[in-house]
Length: 111
Image (tube, rainbow, N blue to C red; front, side, top):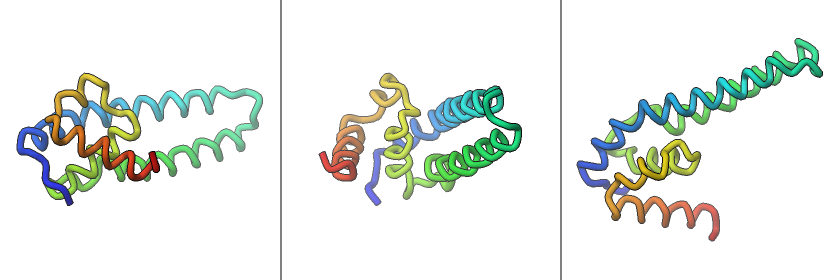
């Protein structure tokens, strides 16, 4: 794994609860929309909610489980890719870390 500066590790630890709450708020909004959809039967809504939670639980694990210094760089990429950092929050990371994240994202996206 790529090392990140100590200050970026501390910043990630500071921003993780903020990003997690932002993600959960987004999921709850989606769940509310599904639950309120009166064009679907209760069983269909239940199934959609179940699928949503199952999918989003995997996303939570990727972004927020197993936070260690050795996984920090991957967590920053995962959180940034899913737009759970604001531009201002992402800008607080060092230029080196931001550039590595952007370079890594372009490798995975093929651009």
